[in-house]
Image 1 (cartoon, helix red, strand yellow):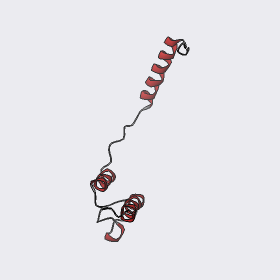
Image 2: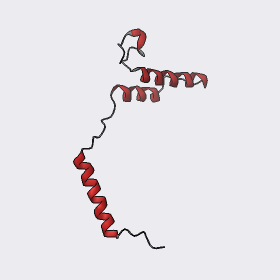
Image 3: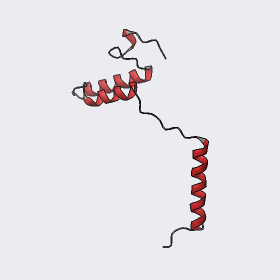
Image 4: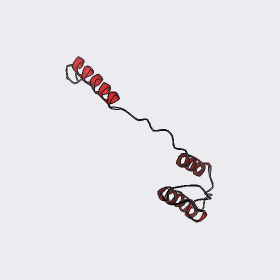
Length: 84
């Protein structure tokens, strides 16, 4: 990640190059359409970038339990499809 300086950030916010590009693209598209770019949508984008929602991490145990449950259900169905 590049160093955050006033010349490399959006309004002083510590964004990555990709995030900065996404913000600038949003602003450019809004300006081309003749619309205001300082919107609640932009604020939400920035909030997500600066404080992203927590990603759920799955462990191997979770995956094994899910696979076992799927096999159990398939065994009960006998592997047959629904009658037509």
